[in-house]
Amino acid sequence: MKKWLLTCTAALMLATTALPTFGLAKETSIANDVSDLAPSAGSAILIDADTGTVLFEKKSHEKLPPASITKIMTMLLTMEAISKGTLKLTDKVPTSEYAASMGGSQIFLEPGEQMTVDDMLKGIAMASGNDASVAMAEKLAGTEVEFVKLMNKRAKELGLTDTHFMNCNGLPTDNHYSSAHDIAIMSKELLKYEQITKYTGAYQDYLRKDSAKPFWLVNTNKLVRFYSGADGLKTGYTSEAKFCLSATARRDGLRLIAVVLGEPNTKTRNSEVGSMFDYAFSQYTVKPLFKKGDIMGTVKIQKGDTKELQLAASQPYRVLVRKSEAGEKITHKLQIPAQISAPIAKDQVLGKLVIYQGDKVLKEFELKASADIKKAGWWTLFKRTTSKLFFVD
Image (cartoon, rainbow, N blue to C red; front, side, top):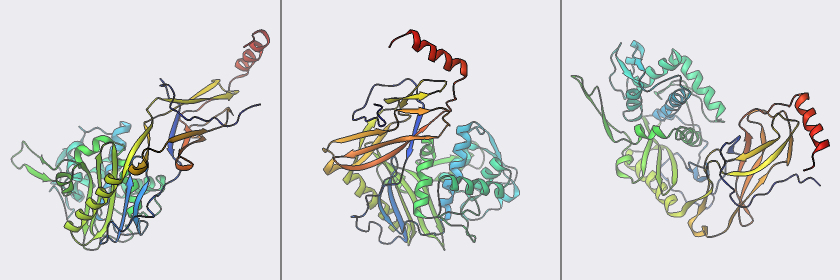
């Protein structure tokens, strides 16, 4: 009798190649018993950056003006372009008359001035440069209007239903809004590019260092200097939005993201984010499940150009547990058919990985194919059939 579910309860051997990829099957929240950690914020959320688990939330889906936190999406599209190879850190970014005309926070770009992508990222992340954001948008999409279309398209791809952008820098305008929840998801996506914290986590630096007019950068996010483990991400302020912050900190393998919107002042904003971090670091820890490359099982492919698919972890996988419950046994089950018929499309959901603590489900991860598997040709199928007539396994 065929077994239609494969069950794994321990990590297996290391793999050399990985075909499947994992994504979060659903957002998890364990925030129900948490008191208000951000009483002065209009909206707030605290999540584990690795799993997306919500540890605390307060009106997290309320649509509010995000001010310069908007630039998280601008930085995300920039980092994605670098990752794809369509943009390099050494590329020169020209400044248009329009980009140079931006008010508010700026690095005082002159029309016609050029800076590298590396320097523009410093100006955006540390000084919250509105002018640098527009220059970067024009570099990537030709105009800010076209870039904003990309921002909204990416927001839709990430499932951000509380977000709509009208510009790339967060200057006040109608119909420009987001939520603490959506900002946390954007931040989580941005943190996949580990090099971003080189910019968001630096407290001070210089632009035009070797010129006659060096420009001293001081990070608008003071937590990167005063809170242990903090290395980003982005502040925001307008009179309408008040004081906002998407912050991240890492200790002992646990990375957190805290978002607060509508705070009355910077002191309260930083204090409440610090309290959110203190709570999570004191109460939670991460438990490793799989190292990158660990094989978790195999699936037979019926009539495919390959006969078998190894299920291997495409990245390290961990779960978040309370420190008080860290001694309880963690198990996992790989739920997937024992045999799948070809063809299989890239990103096709094959099953899921379910994590348990005792009888309680902690987390579920979707299991997707990371490559197409084509149906085998008639000659291949013929050879397989005839080989069974003459050979016994």
